[in-house]
Image (cartoon, rainbow, N blue to C red; front, side, top):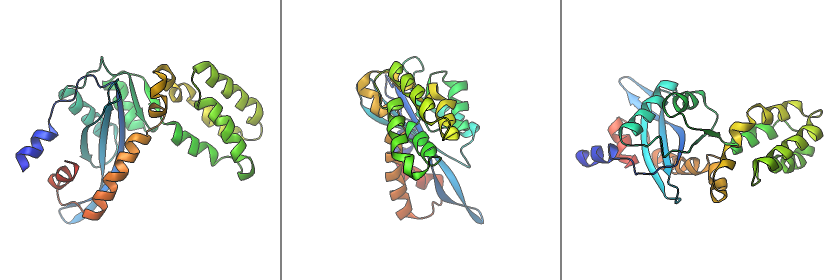
Length: 224
């Protein structure tokens, strides 16, 4: 079935992809004389109508700027349209950000759920629930104006008690609010990388039962 696999691997990207989600998982891959954990870089796409597509993947030594750039270049070669693309969604990763900036030049939405986890661990347990309610007033809103009001309230209420948590929210606030520029029905989908992380969870489950990969062809078979 190798010709079928290669044809699928190099198939044209569906037209009109508006939102690109990027994430990675790590797999044990056997190399001559040793086994190494390698990064499986994954790209999903969503059209303006909400249709979801698995766009492509690439196996690399690590999540570097070069490896992410190689994946993005492959997507562009296969027909990913920069002009149709409105937003890239991922966690805060320098390699992804480098590739997006250099090759796509589109707005980059950083995952709000990752931010939420990182912020709440900096808040004492007795205050965590109240702080989280304030956090949601920043990111679970419909407009940028509401988000900025919520951020101001957070600074005033928690800035003295938890300066590191508040600073983390404010450090890249605009990069976490880009989803608000898109239609409201997409806000829940675009504010986080949950869609691709859920997809990758299924990949992990399948790869875990398969054990160590012996070649990139084995990875391709399971992805297909």
